[in-house]
Image (cartoon, rainbow, N blue to C red; front, side):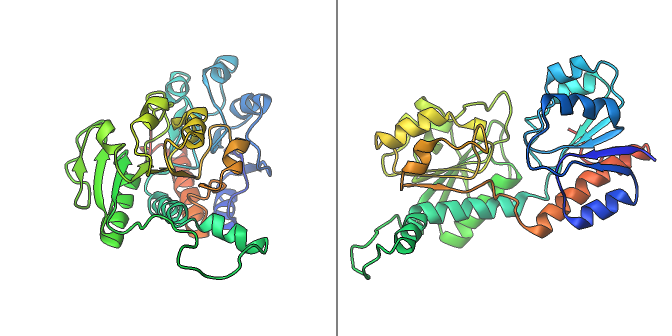
Length: 316
């Protein structure tokens, strides 16, 4: 029976299915693998089911030149924490879980849009601390979302799902920027250069994390946004230059932000926490039991295919 390391606790459905098929070692921690654990994972197991923060970078593979592990079946669609090129060079396949996360992540994008536009987080804090003194015509005026223009940066599965929700749910005009031409955006939408997408009322980032997208949203990008605009990130934390975003918010260069991901999470810059016009969520993008079960079963299906010598369903 092959040895499988699962680096974080999974839903019971996933664990039961894994234990029925493999000799499972469950690492019951919410912290990412330490440098020593990363190397032991490759040395001591046939397969690894890692997730966000488990940084299998080139130095890890260099330190374990003859790894026992033959597959890293990532739990999540984003795999920028794994250097897939270095893994393959050492004979290790890498897979991910596309599709399973699409709708849940798009829903969180809409949650952040609405919370930030309508100042919902700020309003709840006022109420909870007993500072709400009654309704008034000018109380907590926010941005009316219906009919606004949204600029989506990255038009993959998640970007398209956000576009559908914005257009069909809120009558929004959708423009988007994508590195390649998108023939069918899934909703009435117009592909535009990045600078034009940044001119929308609401800018949503949905690109994958990679070397090419690292700090894609930087000081120059924020300088092109409108002062009344909102910035939403549900992609990966390192897509955004956080100090540049903080500076743009503090200077009133943009009106607000909604964030579900952070560059060095779980660390969140205290400047974000101090701003009432910033909505902060603890990486809730896929946090629904059904979604997490689907992700886990998809990752497991990749490992089973590898074990049976079949083509990997979701190789990257």
